[in-house]
Length: 333
Ligand SMILES: NC(=O)c1ccc[n+]([C@@H]2O[C@H](COP(=O)([O-])OP(=O)(O)OC[C@H]3O[C@@H](n4cnc5c(N)ncnc54)[C@H](OP(=O)(O)O)[C@@H]3O)[C@@H](O)[C@H]2O)c1
Image (cartoon, rainbow, N blue to C red):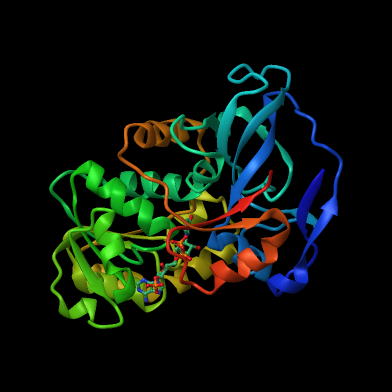
């Protein structure tokens, strides 16, 4: 089969190449999926650049890509949930990535039936951003009536998060640029703060939850607008202090994590709010929940642009530019 592999860490254009690999075989508990579509996430270019080397190390060359939609080709011993021909979508584990490929072998517990109402391209756009949002909102205890600020509402995560927050009954404020204001309103945002026209910090606070997709200064500043007792859930800030324990990290990593989080924890203490950072975990059960939301019309996939399989490097460069409106997807078949 053909698969894109990471051959060294560095610039996307230099480090990703198309290779011919042996077709995968399903081990015990696994299924082999013929991939029809995949989607890109910022973690793909971060991983290629080597930003995550300390957390996830791969023996190179290594296949890449987390999200896919496709059809079951074969099932391994003890795998009972699917049969050849079933349409499915999936997010790989961090250890066994490789969806920018024609096939993948994967633990059947990380796979779910594709939502019946949408295409493979649309289904491939959902797993990582959907799981991220379900898991983040659960950690924050998000519930109806709360006020949430979602940064970058027009991005891959944001477009899912706005819809999911409205489904749960939260009041949604979101940041994006002025050109995307009507677009995020169409997804359900109650209030849009255009970052190129106004300063969100001057627009009042009192949020129960701030969903920080941007990191850097945005993580510390989130504590200026979150209310006392509220939660900042961050995807891009420094790891929270529980992270090293959850990952079973070495003493060196624990110390590094503690130091990286100093400013954020000082801001959290001052605001009387909590800080939570996490790595999204794969889950077939939660993908089933997402499929249900899609089939019920609560979540509509948002595709920014679809690229041909061979154009993965161009697709990664497009995403890395930082202005995708929804998800960037890859037509594998
Ligand atoms: N920890 C985890 O497990 C986890 C999971 C998922 C994602 N993440 C991280 O979360 C981040 C967001 O992911 P994503 O998929 O949503 O990225 P994305 O799709 O690339 O985000 C692009 C969007 O960000 C908007 N944006 C850029 N600068 C902005 C600003 N200053 N204020 C408001 N909006 C801004 C852009 O809108 P304009 O075009 O209008 O500028 C664009 O629509 C990434 O860093 C990713 O790595 C982490």
